[in-house]
Image (cartoon, rainbow, N blue to C red; front, side):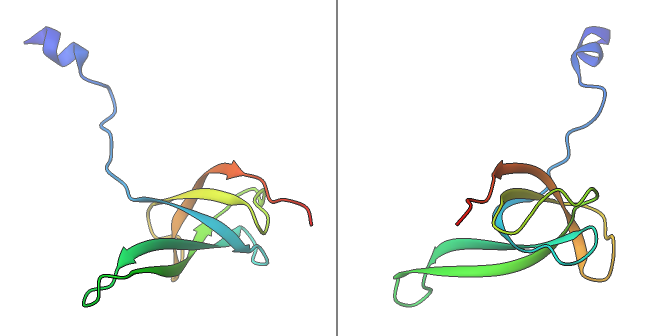
Length: 96
């Protein structure tokens, strides 16, 4: 039994929700607004439709800018509207 306990990881892995989205606003201090789009089938007609939702995510260092593609993960409530944290940058914004 001690071998099985030794093989187990020291910290348990949490099942947190993660989304990938585009930063649409970086005007607030330590906060970015991330637009997450997903494609689902319409309940009645079955047509594929795009659904979108905005999330406020915590950005401690202010390193993510408008247009960046980022991954956000659910975390503890940080403020009234903010309970998501930016975990990593997937793609930098393209200069126009």
